[in-house]
Image (cartoon, rainbow, N blue to C red; front, side, top):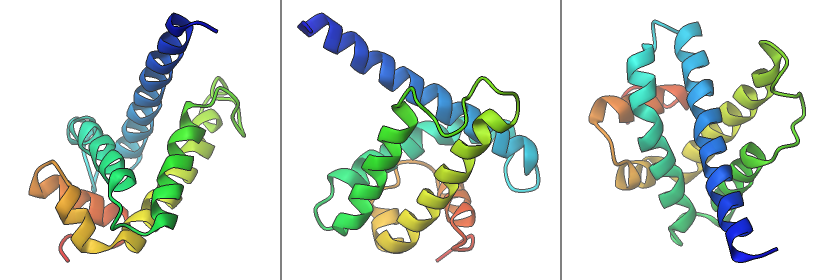
Length: 139
């Protein structure tokens, strides 16, 4: 495998990860309009990806949290899935469940201080992330 093949694979993986998370957020927004509207969910995605990247890089965050986030990102980028994504509705259901469980676990374990320290977005976005993690709108 040459350098260009590796570079194309990495760029393709990142694009796929972004697309999957975009679909997952859109599905969540559609099912929970009282929590978040689709426009806000789409704006939230880049901030969520930055949060996850920062949590993985922060050595003060427990190792288990960093490992969970890295495994989640790896799972989402993998072409092999528990339930194939091309199946209507249920294709993304496993991804939604796994992302929700891991995100909830990561945010609860990392704590509010790490969440606030690494959150790059708005206060409203932070409140939504807390709400999704079962932490309430404010800590």
